[in-house]
Length: 108
Image (cartoon, rainbow, N blue to C red; front, side):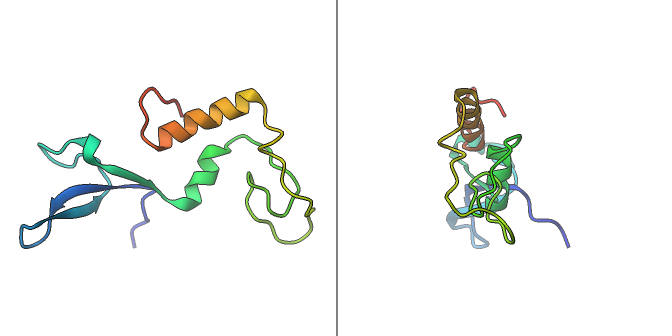
């Protein structure tokens, strides 16, 4: 069984009868004459947190936004990771969001 790709695109295409429709693929421009700007990029939800918060330590809250929901022992006073984030962490997150959304001049 093949693994589900992390990123897929919804692009204009044709159904089996040649009628216009939207189709899924793993390339924003899989053929000649297809404009990648017409593709809608989708990232698997289970990869978004990993990409956004790569390198962040997180906290011990059971509902930490950085590490995700935890089971077992932990605090439940509320995650403050975003409130306590430094300006450089927020700038890095902004760049990562732009990159995931396909923004121009974005760094990952």
